[in-house]
Image 1: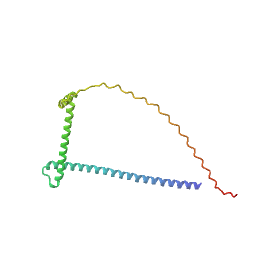
Image 2: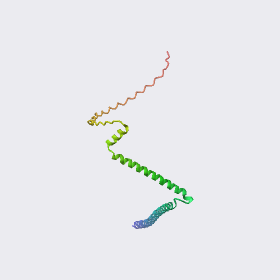
Image 3: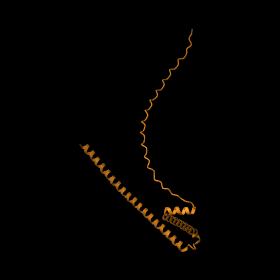
Image 4: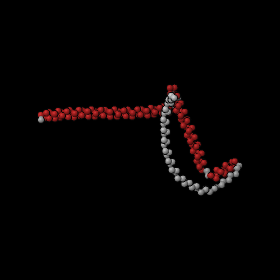
Length: 173
């Protein structure tokens, strides 16, 4: 029985050691998780600060442009020219949008008859409009019954191999 007690003592000792190692590993994992979490938070904060800087630069540039667009410093003249060209392009595109919308609203205001009358007067052509009653809808044909699939052909029987010809042996007469 003392062998059994000794065995159980060793098992208990090993179980305690395993439990201590598990606690140590859990503590290390918790510490690593805290570190990763902190680094992630700091990286997010850095990104936020970089966005703040980007917006401040944009505002600084806008303020400079507004104050000095007529006479920019030589180093910044090219950038101011790019802004002027982009503003001109935007103004041109906005004017075209307004023109298209105006044409669209004018054409929506005109009714069919006035458009036809105006077109006929301009072309000096008489226009006759005939309204036909729509034909009765065509009933779709009932689809034919699908053909039954053909019976699969019976597999061909392989030809029987020919028996090898017997060599002719000369007969002695």
